[in-house]
Amino acid sequence: MTKVLIEVDLTQSPYDNENIHNRWHPDIPMAATVKPGEDFILECFDWTGGQILNNDSAEDVRDVDLTQVHFLSGPIGVEGAAPGDLLEVDILDIGTLAGSQWGFNGFFSKQNGGGFLTEHFPEAQKSIWDFNGIYTKSRHIPGVEFAGIIHPGLIGTLPSKKMLDEWNRREKELYDTEPDRVPALCNLPFAKTAHMGRMTGDDKETAAAEGARTVPPREHGGNCDIKDLTKGAKVYFPVYVEGAGLSVGDLHFSQGDGEITFCGAIEMAGWIHLRVKLIKDGMEKYAIKNPIFKPSPLTPNYKDYLIFEGISVDESGKQHYLDVNVAYRQAVLNAIEYMKKFGYSGAQAYSLLGCAPIQAHISGVVDVPNACATLWLPTEIFDFDINPGGEMPKRQPKDEADLPLAKNPPQLKPFEK
Ligand code: ZN
Image (cartoon, rainbow, N blue to C red; front, side):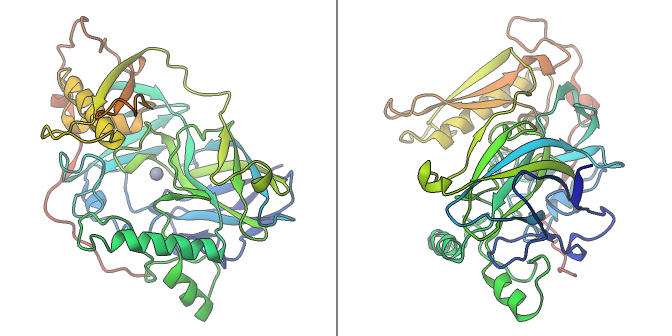
């Protein structure tokens, strides 16, 4: 029987679980230790720790406390792991918890988080997704059902103190270039809502004040939001501290490349079954600076796509120089405008592109001045023909249901622990 090393109770606050943490710091004690070759199961809260509810209001997305995220399960120590090693992690399986067969997707308010298309969708909205085995559909987006590509949005090893200091230095430098920006350029350490696992007292206070936020991906992996780290994938992580300290969370039932909606993919609580091995001195042996991985033999088998191109000329007609971010935004906007012709609201289309197994590809990055990016929309997920030339549906899905929207500015509640 595989051991469950970390259990979560979704009716309790993640702050009351000492095997959970929400910052990166080398001094966070291991929640458990395993031997190389062992497999184990970790249960995980959803990334917000239960702040988003299964209902038809987006006020929870609007008012979410983003200083609390992400709640991670771990760290798991690996006997014999030393700085310079590679930690080989097999993602053996991922699943939902009993009584929690649903997930959420949303867009944050521009005043509280924002997102990839926040200028076009400045108010908080949400869609709820029900799971039926490997399939999912949403009462807020009719006409579509698909197989999820289930994966952890966030998985990584503990940083060394030297690496943590470097993260904090470079991110503060960026932050200071535009400190009043909304949303902020990045998220600096914030002690008040830090959950440092089983740390207590002065040690905890010190670590909480400098613990790195979990928002960006970094050299250790972290919040990469790579949909292809799905069950069956194998990931090689750099090791920076004795014992490695592997933590995981932010489980996604499914996600499109880019996680464009930011809140986020189809977010869920659940469990993950992992196996770890060590490659001694693997970082130098294979010149590893960032994680590398092998894909799963299991992925949703969608073969037919409608592919949208975008170039680095923005919505106002301004020319950008080889900017892939601008080019991909245009591909996304082109896909949304196309889907609106089939009866979807803009919000329904945007949400679906954040949730379904859509692909993003970078095409040319040398043909000055325009970068070219493409968005691949799987056509088989729709219950009607979405190709050009087909008969357009008479049904107007947007008339049946739309994403709940929360007006008014965010009402941030004082943090109580
Ligand atoms: Zn997520």
